[in-house]
Length: 280
Image (cartoon, rainbow, N blue to C red; front, side, top):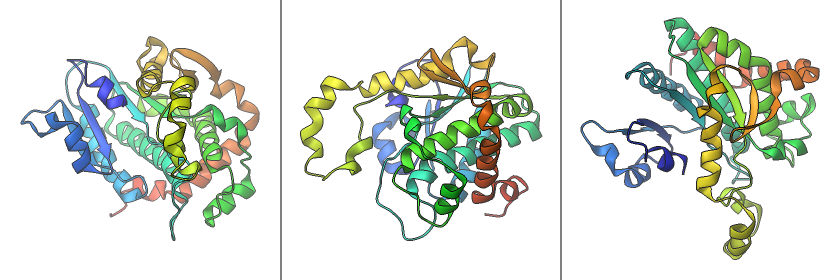
């Protein structure tokens, strides 16, 4: 939905990382042109090698072009999807670990190449992070394949803690200004795995009355990165243009644990090895 809204602007060029490239091509037929405004490239968030490959594409895309605003949005999110036999829980990998790896690798590439064109980054979070019971013990359990009952909220809180302690360095070294944003409660497919499949369609009338439309949610996320203050500050939590929290200052009391979250994610994604030239 966010890409659909952004492509309406005549001056916008889009690079879309998608799991299903064929389906994305059907949604964006203009991607098949000789000089497309929309490019679709593979991105499987459950595969860290795929994330690393996408970083190469994103770095070249953001470095190219003329003058103008550059925006990265880590927009993917899942809640209680079907589990996997091996690897990390898909909720954790999609909602936190993959965006963490993508953003950190991109910032390092930009620092190495001394890229000076400022990039605004928006990590899509959720007010449900307030229900999180995240702890060091839970991080250890996630690494063992036991994500617990609040994986969605816990992964979103991990994202916000990471932003609280890394946003300053990302801005100063990589010229990448990272913020978190909530789209609000949106009538999307996010909750479809939270109930019996036959019940989900029956909730549509209620969702239409109580929730934001997908377009409203998408524009709330985009607004967080498009506002003029997005490159004057870093580490803010927003709902559209409304600032909800200065994560850097207001989560200072959690700095020790936030640093532990970053260390855990760094090891889980092999960030250092990948940044040093990990052979895929």
